[in-house]
Length: 305
Image: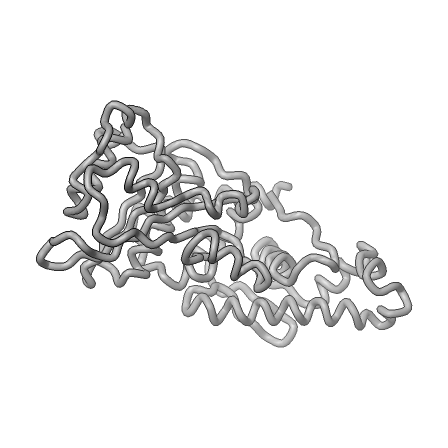
């Protein structure tokens, strides 16, 4: 699906998303500041902010769009080499095949309703975030590891008790599932990703991160404080970790500067679209193929809307 038509009162993050969408979906592979200025003027939303007299010559519209391009510049820096657009004077140009760009996929996921099942976009987003968590901790060459813990899981780890036992064995910490009789279900108790950085001695006491994902266009703010890493550990592991896990929160969108502090306090270390992209290593062939297929479907849906 396409994102809603923006209005002048939308935050810069929403307006920047629209410019990026416009570039991705256009036949020329680009979008301009003037495209958004014209859209805002046609909608009449600028008049609602400042009145027609205050927007003579589209001055107010130009200022709003300039702020959106500042946000785009910030995204380019935050993504490192993973930003798939070139920024020119008042112009955004796509320089990578859209179905080959993790950034474009996350952009498309922002406006789409996540699909369920092993092949759905909800699981795919968690797989991407699992790789980003691994990259953030330094990758396998740095002693780090990560797994997607969230449901649905495949046999032989479909049951929660099985997944917990497997996790403890991988981390050499926690011993195993504390209450197997209460963990016969296939849920995940709110835990989507686990990442850790082990030592060669394999002793307890290591950096462990519990991650939660909020994909799609839902109310992600409600999920920020759902996962309590310490309570999860107390409830499900036979032995508490020596060091409490840190929390990670992943989402495919950008978070505004005004929301960043409170979101980080509630959710832990935030991984927005740009942070995810900046931490991604080279994707495995299977994950890259699944990402390309999902991006292709979302692009097809958006173009047909």
